[in-house]
Amino acid sequence: MMAKNGNGNGNGRSMEGIYSFYSPFYDLIFGKVLEAGRRLAFKYLDPSGPKKVLEVGIGTGLTLRHYPKSCHIVGIDISAKMIDRARERAALLGNGHTIDLEVMDACNMTFEDNSFDAILSPYVITTVKDPHKFCREILRVCKPGGQIIIVNHSKDPDRLFGKLEAWASPFFSRVGFVTDLDVVGLVRSTEIEVQQIIDCNLFNLHKIILGHKPKTSPA
Image (tube, rainbow, N blue to C red; front, side, top):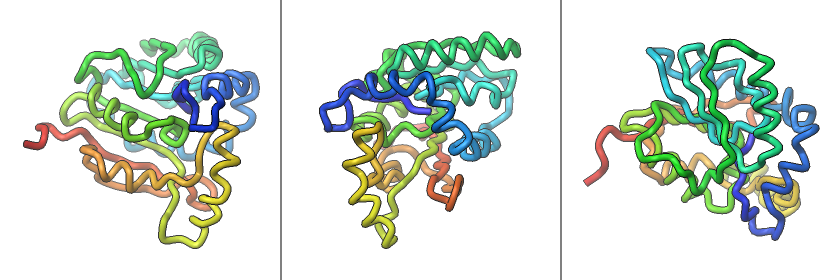
């Protein structure tokens, strides 16, 4: 599920347009293929007490069934059509969750600083035009000490396969994401305090990055 930057990935195509096009059959393409990573990520979501959780890139709402009932879920996506699908899924679930869904750019969120206890971002960071700004926005809206969970493919600069990922990236950018971004390295370069990296999905091509926002800002 992907929150997309409306400016696209530098290929002149709108990410909003691409994922609006995908919306009727997104679940068929990206549902089961990426479900293992989504499901595993929720095993690491801190279950203690009620939480206000932001999901950046809620898409069609495939993750909604995995949330603990104590969560107040806020989900955003750049595509209104994807949000419409998520609202339909939320209504069908009827499982007692508080769920707010909004159309919003992941790199320019309108939430106030320190708004959320936890932030989940599955399969998003390689779809936005400015991944560094994306990380800054996540940090801004997360409460100090709050949990940050990012699930995504990450190019491994030390693998021979990385050369293929770099070669294929211009093609994949035309269909909505890039394959040549070292997501793990990028996240480590930000103020997000990374605690653990877990392999997931087929051939361990994706990573679950577990981190949190520092309780105090660096001097």
